[in-house]
Structures are given as structure tokens and as C-alpha cells.
Image 1 (cartoon, one colour):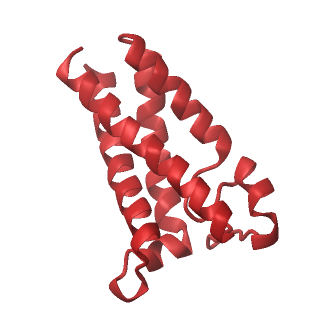
Image 2 (cartoon, rainbow, N blue to C red):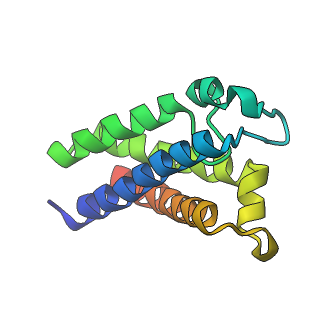
Length: 139
């Protein structure tokens, strides 16, 4: 496995773990999505997680696309999977930053040990995915 492919696999795996941890945590704590444009209801966070995500994770369909692309890239070089991972990473960065709870968790007085770890790790991995995916697609 080339070093660029293995780096993309590694950060994509970390990002996928953050997605799944954020999903479980948001469902347990009823953390509905809350962006400047739309907000969910804690009572419907499970249903909303399929199409709009939660305050701590992207929509389930995004997680599924991410998992598909990661599995393809692990199996071997795949330009389409590389592009999908780059695009998913690029889409997750503003997705994380627009969430009110994420912004609170990234500020010192608003931290929560578990939620802050999930969003900080997820955001960092999303940035790395976007950068590595774009570099690999160019090569």
C-alpha cells in the first residue's frame, strides 16, 4: 500500500470511528442537529439522524458512503473511492463547524470530555481526509 493511500485509509478510519461514536453518543444523549438554518428535535433525533445527522455526527447516508469508500480503498487502489473520501472529508468540515453544539464543545468553558473528544477528533480527521483525498486525486 502506498504511503498516501495508507495515510488516507488511516485518517478515514479514524473519521469513521468518530462518526459512529458521535452517532451513539448523540442518540444516547438526544443531541439533535442545530445549525443556523435548521434545527432538529431531541425527541426525533433517531429519525433525523438518517437524513440530517445529529449534533455529533453526519447523516447515516454519509456514514454509509464513507464506509463503502473506505472498504474499497482498503481492498486496493481505487480512484473513485479516493475521490469519495476526499469529498466526504470536505463536506464534513463545514458540517462540523456549523453545528452549535460542536462550536460549544470546542470552546474551553463549553467542553464535555466525551463530546469534545469526538468532535475534535472528527473535525481533525475530516480536514486530513479532505487534504489527503484531494492530493491523491491529483496524483
